[in-house]
Amino acid sequence: MRLFLSLATAAILSASLGAAQQSTPTDPQSDLGPPLTAEQFNARTLGRTITYSSHGQPYGTEQYKPGHKVIWAFTADECKEGDWYQDGQYICFDYGQELPLQCWTFYDGAQGLVAKFRGDPASEPLGSLSESHAPLSCQGPGVGV
Image (cartoon, helix red, strand yellow):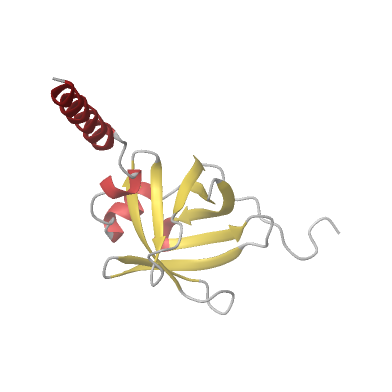
């Protein structure tokens, strides 16, 4: 009888653990769906200024303008003007000589935009921290002088 109770208890515990593992929330990035196309990305970003975060900390801000024009600034850095275009599943940003070419896959998740850097799938994706329709406030050489 004790053996039966021990086996029954073990079976119940095993079933409970299995159910707990199945009910564990999934990685929110696993449900992002396909990357945004250029048309979807443009519709989602045009006229907006979006601040992105990495590991919960502000990373940088980008203003999206007509004609696939952008203004980017890392947090507390000078602004860089550039253009964006689609290259396969990637949205690539060209800032000329200012920065190397930056290509990302963008997803429109439940928490906002998510960007994954091309060539480094293990890196932490960027997530949109805030969005506004206000222009990007740029720092630059000689500002306030």
